[in-house]
Image (cartoon, rainbow, N blue to C red; front, top):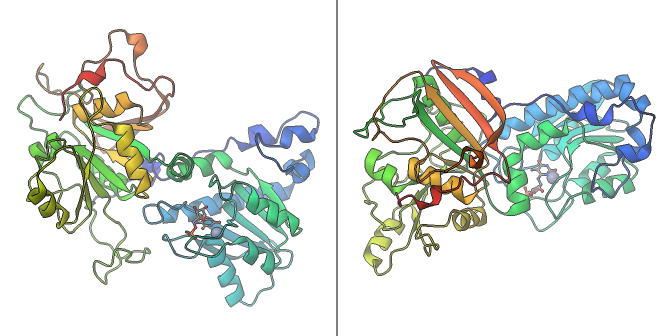
Length: 455
Ligand code: AOF
Ligand code: ZN
C-alpha cells in the first residue's frame, strides 16, 4: 500500500497553528473585559492575565493541549457523530494518564484517563486535567456525565480548548466545575480545536452535516474525456487520499448518473489493517482501522439496479427518489441493506439538497463527502449546503468541448457572481496537486447553475 505523507492531510486530519495567542496574549494593559470570550456568561479571565500568559505554566498548558488534540484525532472516523476528544492528566509536571474517546457509546476521554490514573493508584489532588472540549454534564445520553467524576477525582484545574457547543452543555459543565472550586481555563488552542471538530460543531448546532465536495480534474478542467472515460485522471496517491477522506466521513454522496456510468462501490479500500479501533461494525473478529461510510444516492427516477455495486452488505445505502407505485422494487432494495427515501421535487424540478441534508443530519450523519458528477456538484453548490471543496488537479490535458467539467449547469453570467473559496491550501499529492478551501458564506450560490439537468 503506498504511504501518504501525514503532513499532506492537514485539512482533513491534522492541526492548524494557533490563533489563540493573538487574542489572549496582548501587549495592552490588563483589562478583565478583554478576556471574557464573546457570548460567554461566566468570567474566566482570572487566569488569563498577563502574568499567566507570560508564565511557564501557560507554556506547559499549551503543550499539553497540543498533545490532547493529537490524542483526540485518533478517534477520527470512529467517534462520529460524537466529537473527537482527548484528555491528559498532569501532576507535578508529569503526565500520569491519558485517553481519548474511541467510539459512540464508549467512555469519554476524561473517564478513560481518570480510570487509568485510578488503576495506578495516584491521588489527583493538585493535578491538572487537559481536554480539548468542555467536559459534559448532561444526562439522558449513552454515558453518565463526566463532570461529577472530575469533581470526585479532586483535580485542581481543568484546561480546555473550547466550550461544548451542544446546547445541553454549552458552559454548564464549566459552571459546575467552577462551583466545585476547580479552576477552569478556556480557549487554549481554540481555533485548532474547532477545526478538528468542525463536523460535530456544525451537526450539533444546526442539525445538518458538514459537507465536503471532492473532484479530480485535468489541468484543463475536465473530469472525464468526451467518451466519459475517467480512469484514471488522478494518480494513485491522490486516489488513496480520497479513500482516507471516505474513511473520515459518515457518508459519501453521488448522483444516479455516476452510479450508472461508473458503477462505483464507494467503500474505503485501504486494506484491513490491525488497528486501534474496536470492530464497531461487528463484521468479523478482525480489528478494522477504517469503516465504510454510508452511501447516499440521489436517484429521482429510482433507476438504480439492485445489482449495482453501491448496494450490498459492505455498507448501508440511502437512496433518495420520487417515484410512487413501485412497491416491488422498493422492497427489493430495502431488503438489501438500503433505505429508500421518498422526496418531493422542489420548484426547479430537482431534489432539494437542503432537505436531503436535514434528513441525513436526522440520521446522525455529521459529515458528507460529495463525489458527484458535474450536475450533482452544481446543484449542491447552488443550494448552499457545501462547506469545503477539494479539487485534485492532475497535470494532464484532455481537451474537447464535450468533455465534462466538475461543475456543470448554466454557470454564472458575471465573474463577480462566482462562488469563492477562502482559507486556501495547496498540497502536492504524488504527481497531482490538491487545492482545497472553504466556501465563503454569503457568496456560496453560484448563480445560474440551478438549471442543470437531473443526473
Ligand atoms: C466529553 N468527552 O469524550 C465526549 C463528549 O452519548 P454520550 O454519552 O457519549 O454523550 C455524547 C455527548 O457528550 C456529545 O454530544 C458531547 O456533548 C459530549 N461528548 N464530551 O466531555 C468526550 N465524547
Ligand atoms: Zn463526558
